[in-house]
Length: 285
View 1 (cartoon, rainbow, N blue to C red):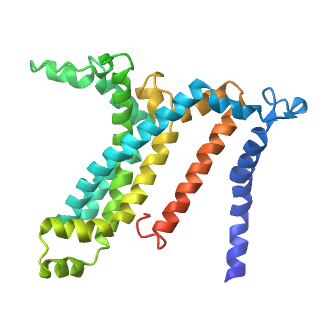
View 2 (view 1 turned 180 degrees about the vertical axis):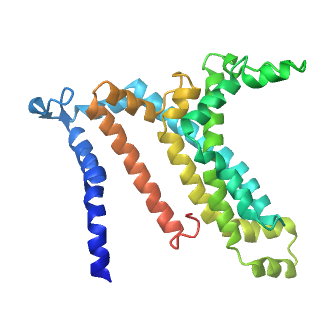
């Protein structure tokens, strides 16, 4: 059985090596080279690429990335836990249908979703046009908010990140809640615990696996993405992902590779944390 499985897996492992391992190896090589464009014949070993990490634009991009990632994670944690808990306590028999409705937007293209959201946040959008036909004036322009730091653009990006990644928080938390043994709740009630004590001392601690898994699943794409800040921020909000894109577009492959490797290390570290917290893979759908 193992030999047959090995033979079947060999082509996949070969393609994985070509399409995943080799590009990572090339990025590792590039960060230690001073090479103009892709002229490897003129490349020399150098550590000066790391000086790019001290530049104000890079520090600002990392600062923006961590700020938006933490805010998105915090908002999704609160909203996601409330939604997951309500589904968990719901007496609706087909809870899978509710979860399907929640993840349904994820089946559409992320670019189209955020383009539609940007249209809704701008003045004279389709919804305002429909409401004006029944004499309802609802003129909203979130991008007009600007007190010196493009607050309107930041709010639009944050809104897009929360809407996009909220399902990634709901699903692991709901899965963790569903796996809680109901007899533990009954035991807490028998010992005199009220509803709040039962939640805080029994349900919440046992659902922490889902919270941690969901937090990482929201934090990482929020920090490394580039499409949402590009579309909703209209180029005014630069995250690390946008900096990587700009580096590769302008053939600064060594700088783009350096930033990509940093994100890869963060991703691998997060996967390690999840594997330690949830060894049985209970919250990984």
